[in-house]
Amino acid sequence: MLNLKQVLTKLKKQINFKKKKIYLAVSGGVDSIVLLNIFLKIRIKIRRLIIEVLHCNFNLRGIDSKQEEELIKKICKRNQIVYHIKTFSFTSNKSIQIIARKLRFVWFKKMLKTNGFNYIALGHNLNDSIETFFINLKRGTSFKGIKGIVYKKKYLIRPLIDFSRYDILKYAKTNNLSWMEDKSNNSQKYLRNKIRKDLSNILDQNFYEGFKKTFIFLKEENFILKNHFKIIAKYLCKKTKNKIFFFINNILNINLIKFYLYRYLSKYGFLNIKDILKIIISKNGKKIFSKDLNYVLLKKPNKLILMKERKK
Image (cartoon, rainbow, N blue to C red; front, top):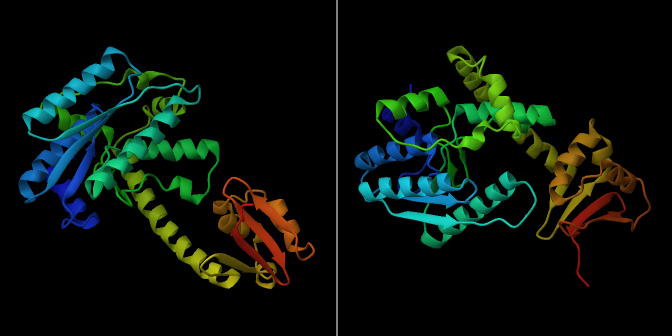
């Protein structure tokens, strides 16, 4: 059951309340409206807590987009909260959802740095995390992709992530809150909506509790894996200021060579594991390039050297 005490107790564990400037990302949907209402109550309990609202208007749903904006302005004015509204327009034919998300977070980050705020609170809930689990599973993913949506990642916090959509709706109705329904959530052209519909027949309290336990286990195991990779990294390579040296003899001495090489080199743009394996057994002086991220992998006696590609 969603209540102020539960949200505040975990929030105090997750963030530093000496840093008391928090943006709330409010879309106008029930999740973010509940998030806003919760923080209005938290503001009363936490002295000198500053909260302000961020709203993105992508003008994708005609009159509904305008009404959402007006609803947020009305709530903020009534509660004396500063609000910031950013209007976007689209000219690309690429996925609107992907572009909108990128634009939203670029603006969020800019606002954070420009105005000296510490956190941005998002309204994701437990259902969002479960849906993301199945989306990643359907597309094919590593262990990282099935651990759900995390509560905190750098400056982003998700205070409602442990509560189901049912809990949030119940809270909204109990507190007589007003919100806008996004009609695009019913469109079956989006994978998330299809999975949401399929899950609607099996989601119950036992299912929610089971998934919450699963996400806790996966989070703990992911932490263990991260520590393992740090240990293996020290065995496989050595970092300097501008270069990373990979020791070929050590690479050849471990099991699952492909797995570890991809894990460590893919973040620099080296995605073709066959090319990496070829350069290990190639002549000294052989190079492969990562054009997108501007890195070069150079073969030297008994080592590979990863460094930035020099521009001519």
